Amino acid sequence: MEKQQGKKVSFLYLNEKDMIEAGVLDMPECVEVTEEVFRLLGSGDYLMGGPLCNEHGQMLWFPKESPFANMPVAGPDRRFMAMIAYLGGRFNVCGEKWYGSNIENPLKRGLPRSILMVMLNNAVTAEPLALMSGNLISAMRTGAVPGVAAKYLARKGADTAAIIGTGVISRACLLAICAGVPGIRTVKLYDIREEQMERFEKDMAEKLSVTFRRCSSLEEAVRGADVISVATSGAKAAEIREEWLREEALVELTGIADITPELYMKSTIVADNWKMHRSWMTEGDEHPDGIESILSWAPSAPVIRLVLGGRVRHEDIQSLGDIVGGTPFVRKPGAPVMFITGGMPVEDVAWGYTVYQNARKRGIGQELLLWDSPHWF
Ligand SMILES: NC(=O)c1ccc[n+]([C@@H]2O[C@H](COP(=O)([O-])OP(=O)(O)OC[C@H]3O[C@@H](n4cnc5c(N)ncnc54)[C@H](O)[C@@H]3O)[C@@H](O)[C@H]2O)c1
Image (cartoon, rainbow, N blue to C red):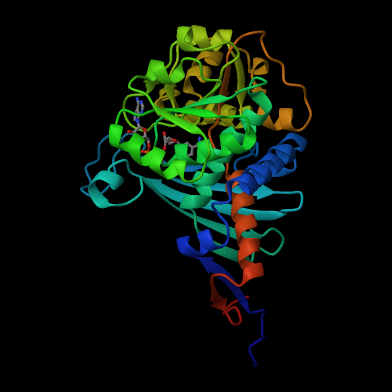
């Protein structure tokens, strides 16, 4: 019997150089696309993993110790994660970001802390569209979120930003904050490693016309700043004190900071998508170690503790998607705003898809064959 001929399928492979050529580093566009993502979130036109469609991702939980020589064990910022999403609107595409993270990579191996790949698929047929280097997608979309948040949540007339932790993610955060709040003129930097601040300033000075000030203490960086962006990694989080914060300061927590429960309770709390943080609470409940299993790393852990303790209600926490979608932002008069972002696969899919479309238009990347005709179908 003659074998039935099926459909040829190929997809675009984009390495990091291709991604750059196709515009992955265009922050103003990334902020615009991310704002569109939040609008879609507000309208509900998206799906993420899990039965409630709001999970951040599926994590490989490394054990604290293992009898197997090669099995990875738990450590700060050590994980593998698969993050899946469907995004509607003009995107109408499914995708996944798959990554691993090891904090020793930059110092010991000449590798970034995390290594990421993004896959995009046709939402109807499941055909692969693209497999792409995800590091810059992820860094850019992560930075774009505080950019969008600053546009909606920073006090009017904001002109000073503080960048706490001058690593990879903070580069993108600063570019986005300056795109979201064009009035930023002064940028104060603080990192526990002086050489990181120097590299950061050198890199960013080429891209932004603002005045940089390297600070010798966290307090110096935070005092007087309108927008404070925190993205540190490692064992010791930055301790941000209430008395350092100016009226209506916006604190953007892309990574974890050490902030007292009292300060959180006085502040206006906004999350990227609180439903996703609630999913983390459910995951914590199901873990053999209980809720403590997520509280050591989830960026929203301090707020989750307050919710569990009955000191903050779910309804007290606003979500950026709702605000971008038109629900009025309610600010406690004079109080700081704490913005918590955990990162969502819808953001990776949106920015990955945009870069993929650019690459297709400009003939960038390498076409890879999946099959000429499927062997079994
Ligand atoms: N929310 C999200 O969507 C999202 C996405 C990606 C990464 N992240 C988080 O962002 C954080 C930063 O990631 P990265 O890739 O830029 O890391 P990185 O290691 O490149 O940079 C972190 C910097 O923080 C500095 N640092 C560490 N502790 C500090 C402290 N107490 N005070 C000041 N500086 C300190 C380090 O010296 C380093 O320069 C991580 O915690 C990561 O988990 C969040």
